[in-house]
Image (cartoon, rainbow, N blue to C red; front, top):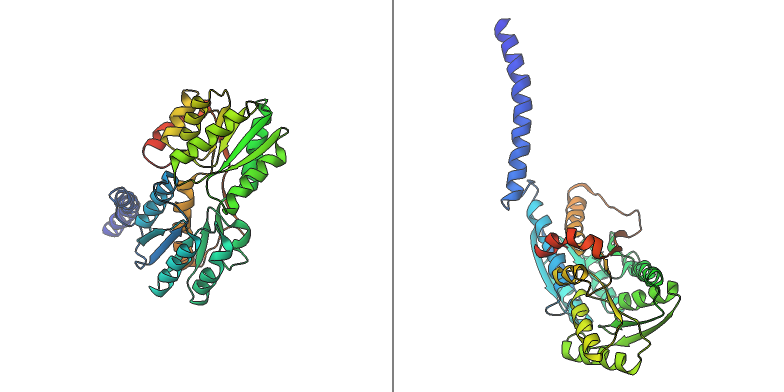
Amino acid sequence: MALAGALSVCLAGCSSTGGKRAEDARKAAVAQGRAAVNTPRWTFAMITHSGDGDTFWDIVQNGAKQAAVKDNINFLYSHDDDAQQQAQLVDAAVDKKVDGIIVTLAKPDAMKAAVQRAEKAGIPVITVNSGSEESKAFGALTHIGQDETIAGEAVGDELNKRGRKKALCVLHEQGNVGHEQRCDGVAKTFKGKLQKLYVNGTNMPDVQSAIEAKLQADKSLDSVVTLGAPYADTAVKAKNDAGSKAEVDTFDLNAQVAASLQNGTLGFAVDQQPYLQGYEAVDLLWAYKYNGDVLGGGKPVLTGPQIITKDQAATLAAYTERGTR
């Protein structure tokens, strides 16, 4: 009986200790780049409309890659800013018989057939970043990202708070429905006048000269809104060369934007938390494959918008430096 009692005490104590050790081992495995689960090594492909050198998509990938490590996923990434080429990349992923696809729908009409082909092949699809309105109709499990119209409305509200009267919305990718929705959202709530300026986002010198010319031609412009973090600094240079006093604000966040917010070069930024878009897309595909789970209830899973000003920039600076904000 004494022996049984001792064993009972030991089992109770060892069970508790063993559980803690197992949890510590799991956390250590994640920290060291090893999977935290023992599910099959599925292959997930992410195909985006990113152009070369867009730092926004580096952040999305950082989130996706970290989730892939945790979930024992073989993660494949490809991109093309030409919609037809992006659709062909989706087709290639279907031909490889990947276990899940994450895709953006910046130009949904060109992507519809490819996404539906994936669905027909039994490959679950999650859309991210752009295409929230088309995602469900195309058969995707869910959409993860920012409602672009709501984000634009938030910018309009912020411009009103700052007493702005005339703003320039710079669209760097013509035909991108999300960009149009952003500018239209700004116009919806902004009490002043809004003008659109279409530029070639793959050529920064041209972007700068186009914004500069517009500011020189219209001195009443008191705000410039760019739709991506890499374009904010270019807009600032254009403003300075034009001798304009317009405030430059931007969608999206990176290390340069955080620094510019801190020193007052930029007024505010709208963060859609791209790290979450990548991380949650991989994690939700894993959950669907493992447990049949789906989030959103038929509606998008929102990761933004969040207005970032000088007051919040210092806190987020460390995160932007490591590439997660």
